[in-house]
Length: 57
Image 1: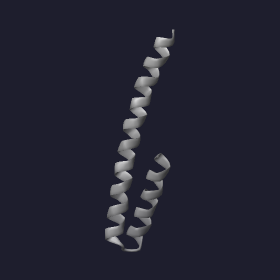
Image 2 (image 1 turned 120 degrees about the horizontal axis):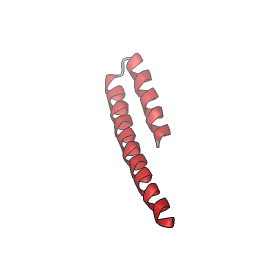
Image 3 (image 1 turned 180 degrees about the horizontal axis):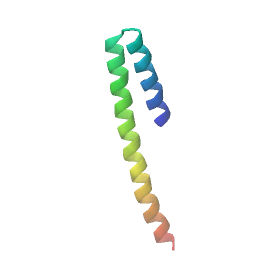
């Protein structure tokens, strides 16, 4: 998922350089949403990964 965030970020930067403001804003918005989803899933995996490893002991 982080890969898609980087891809949309690069698309946004390239579109902004060529002057496509609407496309750049849309791609940046998608990249931002995907980034926050990635962060939430990462934190959840850390929390539940620790609780699962502790219950195995």
